[in-house]
Length: 175
Image (cartoon, rainbow, N blue to C red):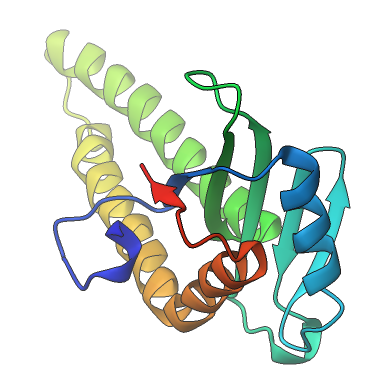
């Protein structure tokens, strides 16, 4: 489990994994739906073959994770079911991170291009510093996201544990 290690070379911000179960789609979805109300540390919504698991508001902090679970027929064997899981920060936090990445990227790119054009014409410009500044800001945003992931790690592991226990398949395979 990549998100379960303290490995610093792991660059995932939204870890994902896939499980293969011998239970049917309906059985798995029913098991998860029945297990959600029994938990006081997890809230969930099921829509079709998607299940969205969250930490309740009274236990949330800014970096609390959410988990999207997609249950579908396994392509390689019709008698098995694929369970795709995506863990990450709540959507508002994720959108904020993406906004900062895009804003820094656009400003760094166009500022750098304009600065290079002026420098190529022999004029002095401070805009050349936008490219290294953008790289520094990218690193800052990335390490902020990694800090948040580390802060939400226990809740993330709790969501994964809940999924495994609610499905309760002794022969589940993790890909």
